[in-house]
Length: 167
Image (cartoon, rainbow, N blue to C red; front, side, top):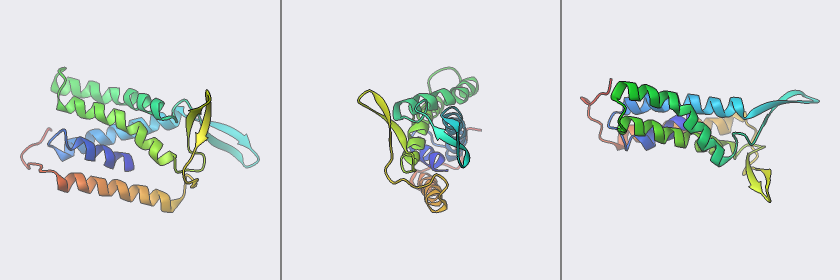
């Protein structure tokens, strides 16, 4: 929800349809966050059983941008087929969403116990700010609330025209 809210807020400055921005941002958010989590976690056997562990493959800031862009390619291709191959506001919306989805994921992960990876002295090291559990209901609720606030800000701060639909 946090990524969707952020992407809609940013892309609402590009396109004049809230619903278009919401639809594209939702697809890119689901695709990008899924790719980052599926490729960037491996299972490690501990005394407590199988535990998912993040890897630097996707959980670094620069690599998260790359994986977010890769995940947005299907949306960009679909928009190219619908709106034409030329570079336009609709494709730019998907491109910006692809660039931002990874860093938004890292922004939330940096507050968890294991954080994200940064390179120090040529080696990957974990970096965390707050060390919250990844499944902390209060922190997750706050992230969802911030996402909803950004959605509402995108809806109310921009002058959308009721007759301007892209569907």
